[in-house]
Length: 355
Image (cartoon, rainbow, N blue to C red; front, side):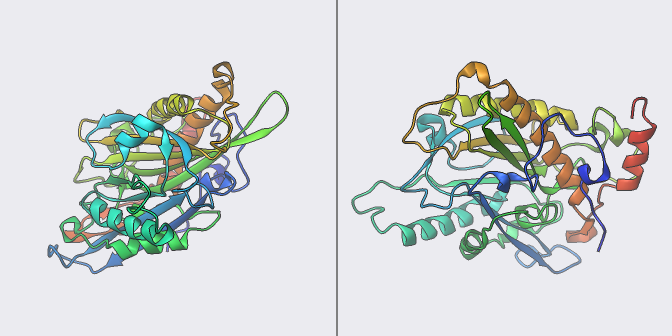
């Protein structure tokens, strides 16, 4: 087992705004995250049998029945090469009325079936005298390490991830949907960070981000403005175009349109890490406000700048956390994704002018 640490714990500068107590998405009151990690077998790929390197991550923005008490939401698609479901409803209506699930590309429908079962059990009125919910399942391609054709994620795994959802601190790196993911041709996965924004009356609001990081070329990797990827000695082979899924939650009183404005700023945080949103990368950001939908006393648009800063900083740190916390993993056909070499990264950053 490798000893992994976040860049913040190593004393690296990661932005201006303060973090929440766990520095992850669960700092937003009520947010819970659950994972199911599937790791089985080694050796040559036998489609349908393995090796298996995949999983499910569930995000519940509030500890209530979301179908009956939905959240406001906004979504932005930076590059549409993705198979996520649930996007049109959020674009049209600006609401989220179910949990958010993350998994691999070919398991989206199986996970959706699990969520449907979960919601039907909670809400017997669905399909009788009530409208059907909008299922939200987002994905990345983990086929470099995983037998993705085997569709090893089952509906029961989605239900189990929802049942396991707890308060933080959350697990990061090779966990849940992040088990088989790659980032900058190194080991990627789940990453998260948070920021505190204080309004003019001294009230604190939290912005939390969670990413499923599965994108990029090693040579493009940046850390705090330093082109670290151009100097790392890590072996990076077999690039498979992936995706970047970002989920943000805040307790601030924001409208659907303001949430979409925040979602648009995520691309600035992505670029801090070296992402160029390549053609084969499905890059989506879903932003959710847990502030009660019964109230419409939204913040003024002129007071959003610190929220933009929070999103940009937390996005970049979430991606870096996914890399720093992920561990080397061997998958199908002997494919290996090596963990970001932390000590070498620190040396490069500290040798850089101004580092």
